[in-house]
Length: 134
Image (cartoon, rainbow, N blue to C red):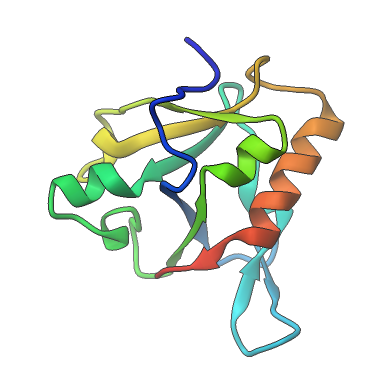
């Protein structure tokens, strides 16, 4: 599997499902909303799971298809964010995640699980630059 698909545009929005748990959310100092922490963007052995907005839209779905239960929040960020920090995005459809599994993708680096410093850099950028969409 390649680590970055150049056919996925920099402006594409990616969604990340985040449980409403203290480790994953922190208070937003500028408002009453919660913001994702770096921990909300943990690396699995193959990368960080996300969902492509354009693929969801092509099936007439939106960010609500990503949330599994009412306490899940969904945050979005553009593909350019991980790319700016040396990571890429690849499609990774999964069958066991209806209805959004077909739109599943991974944020990954050339090495699927990069060193701790790179993981921290990418995760921090995603947390800092994501916006709540649901």
